[in-house]
Image 1 (tube, rainbow, N blue to C red):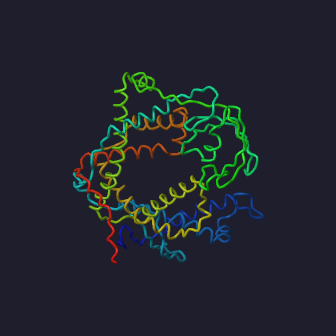
Image 2 (image 1 turned 60 degrees about the vertical axis):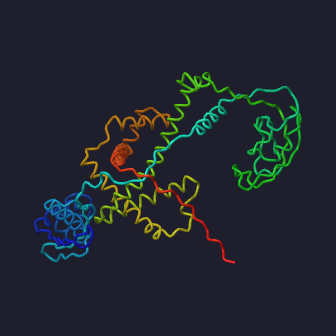
Image 3 (image 1 turned 135 degrees about the vertical axis):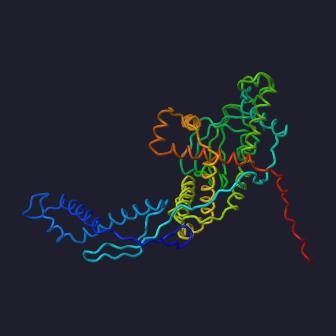
Amino acid sequence: MALLEGCKHEVELTVPLLTIADETDKAIEKIRAKVQLPGFRPGKVPASLIRQRFHSEIRQDVMEAAIPKVFHEYATAEKLQVVSQPNVVDMKWEGNEPMWFKAQFEVAPEFELEDNYRGLTVPYAQPTVEDAAIEERLATLQQQKAEFVNVDPRAAESGDHVLVELESLSGATQSINEKEVALELGAEVTLPAFNENVTGMEPGDEKQMEIVYPEDYGAEHLAGKTVNFRVKLTTIRRKEMPELNDDFAQDLGDFKTLDELRAAIKRSMLSEKERQAQGVSREKLLDGLVGLYNFPIPEVFIERQAESSLEQRLRGLAEQGIDPRKLNLDWAKLRESQAPQATKDVRASLLLERIGEREAIHATSEEVDAEVNRIARQEREAVASVRRRLEKEGAIGRISGHIRTEKILAFLFEQATKVAPEPEVAAIEAPAES
């Protein structure tokens, strides 16, 4: 066996005559079972006639069966961890001689894991939550719990919350006839034409008005359109905010006091900020870990990872309503551009796998069950039904692998030496010379 480069090897092997004879007999029997020739009953065609009539097909079948078999026996005997299909680059098989072939293949990389994965230096600052942020979150909850109370008929004013009937008269690509549309007069989210025309109207009043929708308006069928509407004001409402007190906290959940609610909000916000900060630090931690090792990576691993990353990007485009097939993309260059990141991802994955083995880090059945339950709650389906689907899709193994990877990263982060991140320095442009 010769090492060509990286993880790629080349070997010359011989298929013994006995193996060739055995595979030839199998090929003949396979053809005999399906061939129909005049003068012979099904399955009774003589082997000599099959050899004569189907020589090329028999030869191809023998090569396709014998080469992988002999290669597998060789790899097993040599205890090779082969990760790619053997690529036959040369072969010779003449007459009644043994078959000779030369094959190239890749094996899993060999590397020695050192103890340098413990105590990696990583920038990290413990996040904090300011009181102002907590009060802002409280105000958002207060807005969500607000109630709208009808007011006695009067002229609508800026700041009122009103209900109107809308009927499109012209300009719309599809007819609009809405019986209850809510508007907040004077709000930035309300189109200026509505603010101007509805202000001053009283319940029961009707008016025709022209509404110009901006080009970037959210509803595509209205974006950039000028629509004439018949508008009828039906109701004026006042927004009543609940008082921030212990009763408000109790209405939101298992809280006895407003201070308990504030504490829960702080914990939630801190947890989210820690998750984000640790996510950034973990990426830098992985960069540091990968930078310590430079073992070769099988090309087949890089190609699979690059293809997987590309598929994820294309799925992302499809979810945005973009058909990748209609884009003028250079697929060869796109795949090539994925290679550097794919190499890093594969090396990181191999290192994390080895660290997990050494530290005996695994996903428990309880952790996998908890994730399946979370998915079931999110999709509002029965747990048993979701589990059956995930098992059928082969996703349980991926869930377990993801949990294990997260636990390994958490372990490395816990073992890491945290240092203060370098302050971000804003670029300052030099004044132009006069």
